[in-house]
Amino acid sequence: MSNFTYATWQVFVAELKESHDKHNCSTRDPIWIVQELQKTYGMDSEYVDDSTWLVDGEGYYKNAQALFESLDAEERHDINAFVLKESDILFDDLDGDESSQDDLLESYARSKGFNWEKVYYVEEWVSVQTFATRHDADRFIKRQGHNYKELRVYVESLWRSPQLCDLMQAILDGELKLVKAEELV
Image 1: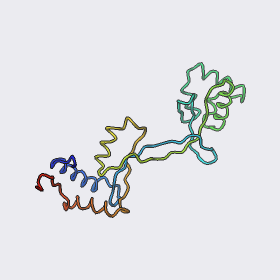
Image 2: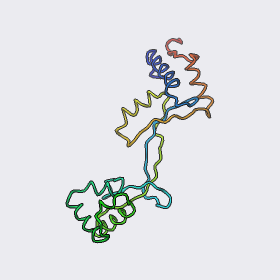
Image 3: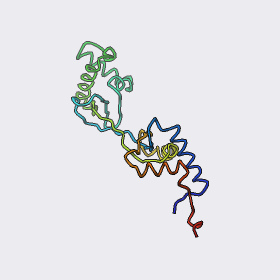
Image 4: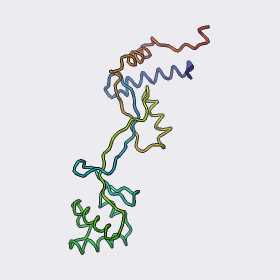
């Protein structure tokens, strides 16, 4: 037996109607899917463009400049001394020349035995859960979002599932109503 009461059924139908009218993202027969952004690291740089700096297997930095700026003054001074010796210019003065920054920072990290590396990755949105209404998808994110990384609500179409389309349309049209088992006796 479902957990619907007459009150919760009315709320569900109202949310379903609003979701179809206002939150459908111009999609016919919408269904809402919560998705999580997942990144797969270790890709070959010849096949992907997205990269990040990984420090000691934990810290992620958008680029070499961001990593450099996150360091304390003494570490930045050491890097500048190394870069000055290698290329007669300070690390900050290489701003905009990402390739040189990457190469020099990798050389510096190797010379010091640091576990710093530039890694390439791909991003993929992976479906977590499907919902009949946008409201329910938003409630899931609010309730369970702390268990995931980055989440979004994505709208997909049910057009390949005629039975689900008919079921949703029957609810929207009022053809399908809540009848409790005790009323049938």
